[in-house]
Image (cartoon, rainbow, N blue to C red; front, side, top):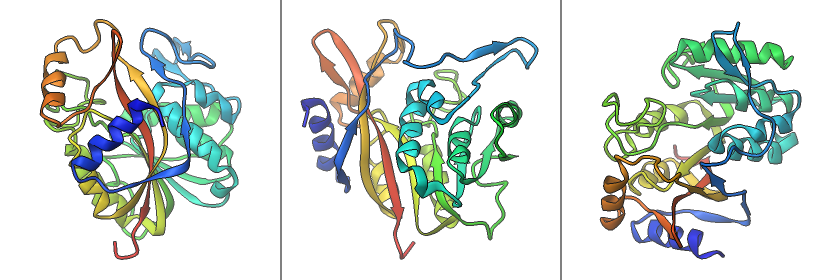
Length: 277
């Protein structure tokens, strides 16, 4: 196992995290913020709210999206036929990419986002890609009825350590002072809407406090499925680098240094709902 991922997993276990590592652990291509990810580029539509819309002509097109989303999309594609006919919930759906991939694999998809623009873009992207998405506006599972259950939940939620609404980071990235504020709200809600032994797929990098794993571990059996290095651009997060470095020193975040490059270890995790949850 490469030193980067081995060091990160050792760091997590030293902080009390409990999890398994997939025997077929997949290493996705490392992401360099200086470069665009491989794959088809978003196409700008000036007449469509002046936003970039991803036109997904087939499942694999989603693999060219942003570095966090493409890792989760790859895992959804790998699950393949396991999605067919299953209820699938995408929390914080953004432009709807993950739900569209699942729908193309014959899942029955519901999506939520607190941002009305995200809801609009998801619906329009679904039309562009000839799939049906049930998209609802609201925070986390707020728009989901109490009795609705899902076999799969996918969530790309903010988890960088920064005060929400402070302007330090965009709202789509700030996860509270320790990076676990939004997840602490989301996890019990997700559990309530998962079927017995239902699965949560989520992306997590190495900046949030490792105590976040205790939150997951209360409800899920965790398994690391995929990983990559997410390198920082030279001037990226310049104002927050001293904070990140101090957090690394205090073992409340983990940074990976290689030669003259600095980055995060990032992965896709699966949480299988415990029977007692």
